[in-house]
Amino acid sequence: MSNANKWITDRLPTEADGDMDGDVRMVPAPHADPDDYLLVHWSYVGDAAPWQRTDCWKPPTEPTPTESDRIAALERRVAGLEAFKKALMQPSVSYSLGN
Image 1 (tube, rainbow, N blue to C red):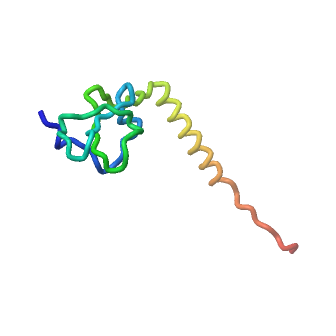
Image 2: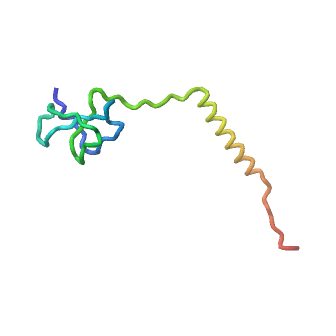
Image 3: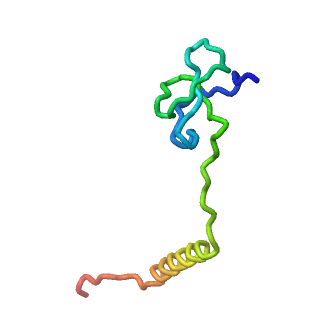
């Protein structure tokens, strides 16, 4: 199966594009057969060089917020809104010119 239509050239890979070893696929020469690729560390890929993620690549996992994380975030939001309301309810400060 040819990988020709999957090569990325419009951006450099990032650490998140590398597999567990930090590797991505890269063609060894501009006109090389796309099925003849090398595994290289993502940081070695130069501008406009065709590259792609390896079959071992997995998307980074984002931690799922726990119930206590969600409750804590809501409590912080409520506290912020209460402080804002209190600031709005403060009487205006007026200054006298000595009259």
